[in-house]
Length: 299
Ligand code: HSE
Image 1 (cartoon, rainbow, N blue to C red):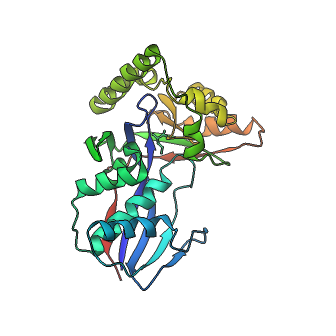
Image 2 (image 1 turned 135 degrees about the vertical axis):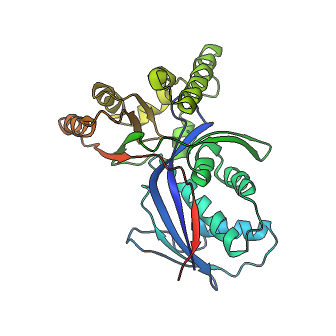
Image 3 (image 1 turned 180 degrees about the vertical axis):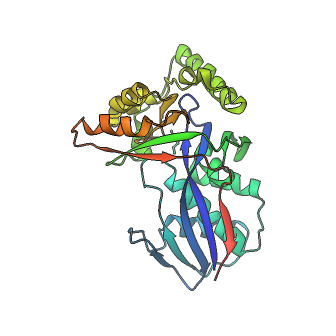
């Protein structure tokens, strides 16, 4: 049996819509071995699809087919620490886990870069799937089924606060909220900030990062779907966050927090609690993950 871990990811990072992403130190775990048919269960009691429609199973099967190897089936046991449909890359984690697992069981017919390409093709968004495989901060472009990327390891002392709501938002719905066209002005607004975000993170020069996190391509449209989301932005900035952005397609909101700002979590949690809204947000402290997905043989 093999054991796979895949980190959560946060895509977009403000202005870098569909192009920037980073991995976080919250991992899903998957145990996998060849079997006759699907035998799928959860090790943590959280319900998972147990049939052929299971995303890990389907993805693993796609890799067997791609490399022309017969597929009998798989036994899969899941530990889902990444909350589902919250904008933290839970689907990417399943896709990456399925690909990495199948590739390992078959003796690694595909290189890691081929897995990066296949994951982006299946997931549709290289800004989630690429950091899930590689870890760190990633800039990625998907062109003609190939991902052109650069990965930068992050300072593991970076602090993130994820405000995870008690409601879900599907990527499909969050993408449907986007306009078919944007103005030239908004395009320039974003590309200048995405460049500033990438260079700020790569150099560790974070003094401009609040401006760099500004966005006009997706957040203004998606915040309307995230009840209480604007208030979370306000609270996070009020408590001294360096940058705040919608994580992936939402509804989680991620704040980058100065490591010296030790009071951030308690202050933000107290302000959130004072809201007395039905839509609540759980505050989870996270760090970067520079390792990416891992796999090892186990008993
Ligand atoms: N960049 C994508 C989006 C990520 O924002 O729709 C979705 O997983």
